[in-house]
Length: 258
Image 1 (spheres, rainbow, N blue to C red):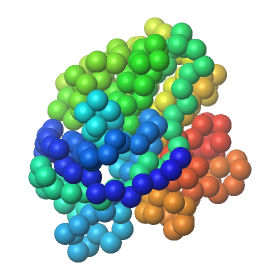
Image 2: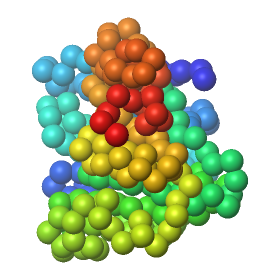
Image 3: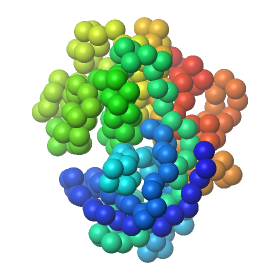
Image 4: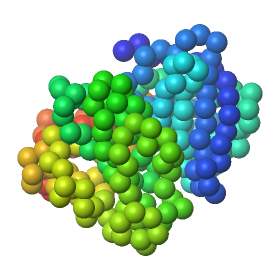
């Protein structure tokens, strides 16, 4: 796919809570095709300690409004600077980068999308694309506490939403791999993104039950083009750059203990 480097205009900045911010961007030209699971490399201006672009998953693409959404966790100098953006500001972005999730071969397939923390971000757009194709997914979203769950009303537009929290304040208490929906439905495909221990646990469950599973890796991707080798992951085919061969990778290609 063709890649673009564009100055996108900030439409709005919504502070979801004290850590997460939803940034909506647009441009005068129609946004290019973006696949669910792809990401953006953003240039952080005004932050002397941030020399490299920051990789951010594409949270959603609203073609009717010509908007690209980024869900950002403000945890470092660069992302905290992004959280300070105002409506009308300009954000230089290189996109769309990487590959995307695999769409099911049949709309009748039962698809489970598992996310934790800011890893829920790419699952919203994937869920929308699945729903548009006639395949209504099940979202299984986990967090430490109910206050850490993100964008639930948006997810509910495109599929059933199941929740887990470690403290039991929302949904079922425990981890995503303990949720009762896993015993209710025999899924054909799983896609997951979030903390690596969570993705490893989901991959083990999928492998044990013979379910096709893709993970969206969150290795540090400094350039987005496979030049800097910051994001190398060991696979059955040898070392690959996650920014080019991923970030979405089938678990059969990974050397995780599954």
